[in-house]
Length: 223
Image (tube, rainbow, N blue to C red):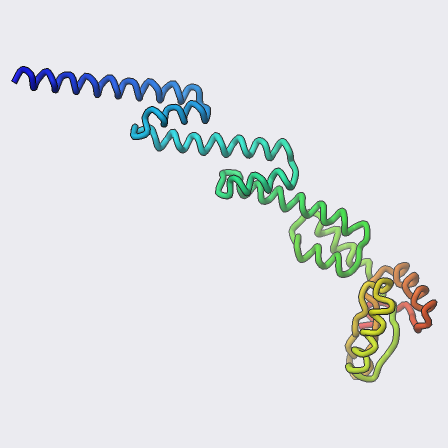
């Protein structure tokens, strides 16, 4: 009986020491508050009551470190890297928003230097809520003219001519479009994409050199 009591006492004492050691190590890890410290704690006390919290702290610290790196870079590549490594991170939505904003700015810088009806509409479709969207809409409104190439009695005739003119003058006109008849009219028109007045004049000058009739018309009247 005495031996049994001694064994129980020794076991209890060992448990107390182990618990005391784990608690001490946890306090030390908490004070140090680094990934290495928490990992060291887990290596020693994988089944301790603080193990889950240690893992959470490691995840939080790694997330914060990745986010700090992304913020320091402040680039599309940096935010993309964060999202790739921390897809469910605490800063995932902010990273996505910043990435989209940077991509929109890059796209706008490219678009505004050579604005066309197609490029402006494409930008607005991709980034309708970007700060630059209002500028894109305003710029789109300035494209109030077309270079009109000719009139045709039927849709088939207009489509046939469109292919030939697109091949010959597509680079000048940006795009050849068939303008449908309005009201009681049965006439189809072939025109360029919407342009500024100066762009339409310059396009018509080039087209006329190629032997094709061309006149500048307001977009509203051409449609």
